[in-house]
Image 1 (cartoon, helix red, strand yellow):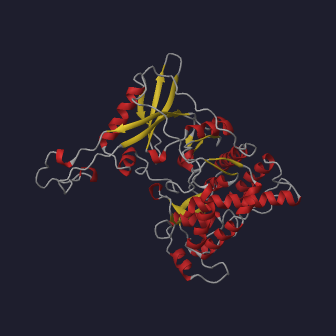
Image 2 (spheres, helix red, strand yellow; image 1 turned 90 degrees about the horizontal axis):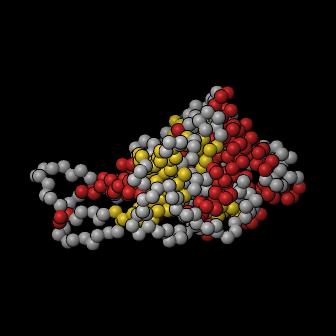
Image 3 (tube, helix red, strand yellow; image 1 turned 135 degrees about the horizontal axis):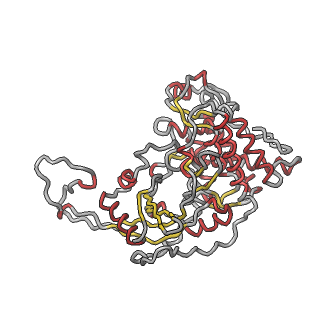
Length: 457
């Protein structure tokens, strides 16, 4: 699981286009055709098209099987090995979260043809313009060893619904109809997260078999990839938070990271559950009319973590990234007090923080009804999670632990830059303005006061 992932904001159409995927991963146009050919070989009787909703880390095709009575559509997805999916983990997730999780099968590795060596290329006409880095002429006469270039091919259910990234309101004032849709989605997300609370991790489930919807033979050498590591974040929690506590770009954020680090021991009070590692608008499928949660996709980053770490996802339902307002016009996180990056942890003025604020171009904007939506989220969790709204020390201790888990999720997701999957650089205002603005806004939320079935944040 990596809680820092592809762009926090809704990516541009170009960044989610198939061409962009191939370019970012050092692939050439011929590789795209190789993927399309492999799909046609796998399902020769199906209607195959490029899927309208492309991911940042994959190339996806829709595969429709048409009969006299019905049409069934699944997805074929090509992913670089570093972004592979552990189908065993997805099978466990489906048992915990039900039909909100698509079934996933691995058809195995697809080896792409080696890139043409420069010595074998036809010479370009004098003055010809080079079209891309992939066609760049090697300036040496040394023949490079061919590199093995592989994509992993998966097939999965096509769930109904529209990515929330396509529906997210970008106006701080919600109409009654839109508010009702957001309210339903917020409550459904709370229900989704609550489903994992009683599920302690046990032995892995068997890997599902490959679907037999097509009579075509599997790809050559089709086999499951080696077991992927599933504990990417949990073993490094202390190290990652300690680094944020010294390197985040404002004193107030560093102080919040330090406080969260000091509270890590409270996570022992929470069950360890299978947690989706990327609860962002592009991975949440929603009924466009009613707001009903239809599914959560892309479980490549799923990992066993303390319950509550994925709660950062609800913030995406309470607001959006918008143009920055003047310093005196900003509101807090859904009616809450805001972390002031103009002061350090001792209340002293941080002039650098003030300057960053004045020059900011984008920030997180909460909806006018965010406080009510947030209360609805926590009220449903109180109803579904035993003891969360209880009086006495036990209830208070559990709420404290959940608050720490939620802050862990926010800090790890937004505190480290994606950097094409490296996730080893602490964010800064110059390169990661949106992530820093979200850290400010999301960590301004007060989560105390869950008591007697009433959520007061």
